[in-house]
Structure formats: C-alpha cells, structure tokens
Image 1 (cartoon, rainbow, N blue to C red):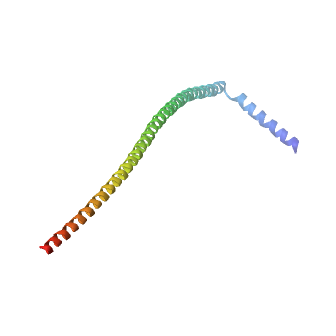
Image 2: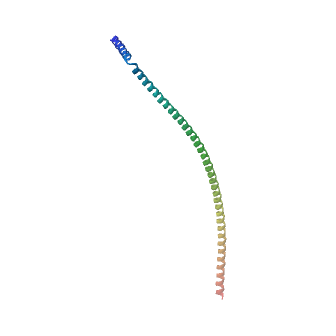
Image 3: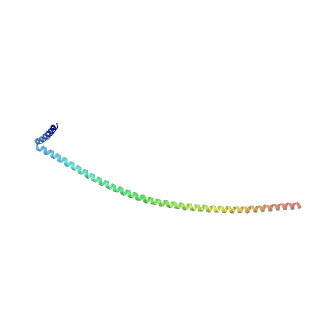
Length: 153
C-alpha cells in the first residue's frame, strides 16, 4: 500500500513535468511575465503600505510627544494654581484668625466697659436712692414740723 502511494506521487510529478514540456514557450514566458508583474505589483503595494505605516508611526510618535508636553504643562500649571490657592487660603485663614482675635478683644473690652458702666450705674443709683431717702426723711420732718406748727397756731 505504501509503495502504491509513492508510485502515484511520482506519477503525478512526472505528469506535471510532461505537461510543462509540451506547452509552448511563448505561453510559459507569458505566464512568467504575468507572475513577475504580479510580484512587482505586490512589492509596490507592500512598499506603499510600509511607507504609510512609517508615516503613521511618525505621526503617532509626534502626537505622543505633544500629549506628553501638554501633560507636563498641565501638571506645571496645576502646581502653580495649587500654590496660589494655598497662599490665598493661608492668607484668608490668617486674616480670619486676626479678625477673630480683634473681635474677641473688642468683646472683652465691651464686657469690661459694660461691667464698669453697670457698676457705675449701680453706684449712682444707690447714691440717688440714699439722696432720695434723705430727701424723703427731710420732707417727712418738714411735714411734721409744719403740722406741729399748724397745731400750735
């Protein structure tokens, strides 16, 4: 069985070889020219594809470089913005702390002034009450004297 396969394989090659030998040379040359032309066309297309691929790779490289440059610029600007924001917030916090301290001092001063005014008002009210009490006693004494002199008369 194996020997039959070998024989049929050899016969196939011999058959093809004998067909080639009987074909006219112009026909073989025409096929050869067609094959060479097709190979040259394929090579030209491959060369054009390679050129386009190279251009695409270069454009991709340039785009990547531009994207990296823009990313660096964005990062730099973000850093500056963060620095400015930090300075502004630090300044605002400092001013708020100063305003709070000033307000606290003002409140303490107002409380002291209020306590002083209340103390002074209480002292004056007490003095006025004593004066009023004395005036009432004097008026009562004067009224008694007037009543006593009216009774005598």
